[in-house]
Length: 274
Image (cartoon, rainbow, N blue to C red; front, top):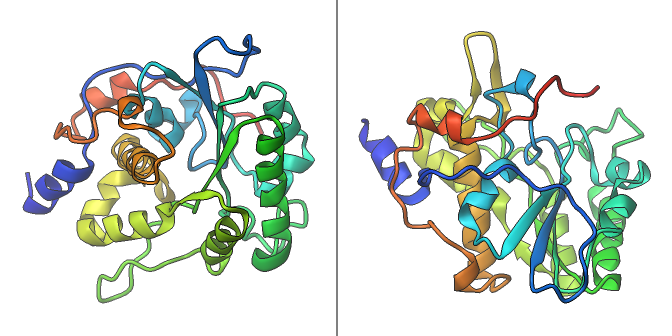
């Protein structure tokens, strides 16, 4: 195994074996002693269908890093922005299942950036922040804690091998909003950019959805999803969103690229809806 891979896996590699398919949001009695982490986001975090494998959203791997006291309800959907997710009624549907003490983790920007699509586009310093406030206010109104996560970075390098940011002002706008609203921020954009830089041009191909027929520099495969989920869980602990007892396996040094990983992640049967 190359030195770069060994180094990366020591810090960001996959974890031992446990199936962790996301749990649908269902109504629960208040005060039943359990909490749910709801995830609102786009395709980079979403649960995937069988026709998309090996493409893997980091939300599929997040339960590996959390204790059994927390349930992950992954509501992230391919192609959605902070605007379209809310405008389609998905935010309202998610909030009906939220209970006091739950968490709402919010990651958008990839599709907010699509200026040619009025159904999805938001402007970083105005409508993007306005829509994100709807998620924050909705969670707080239900007695839940909102958490903002800057978007995971794409795989893009310049000719000198420097990993490049691709999200424009959206991460900065989210950071500013987090400060204004007193919301915990997981800076996954900065952390993933640093990770891709450490891995380098060639090694990062094994963390993205590169196959014999596709060279996808936006969506991760199982090793990439696991690495990003580890970043998310580490930040949930570091920012004191979760106590140490609710986070696990951060120090494991299992080979993230082992073929057994694919058998431990669950894709939904059938094809991805349009």
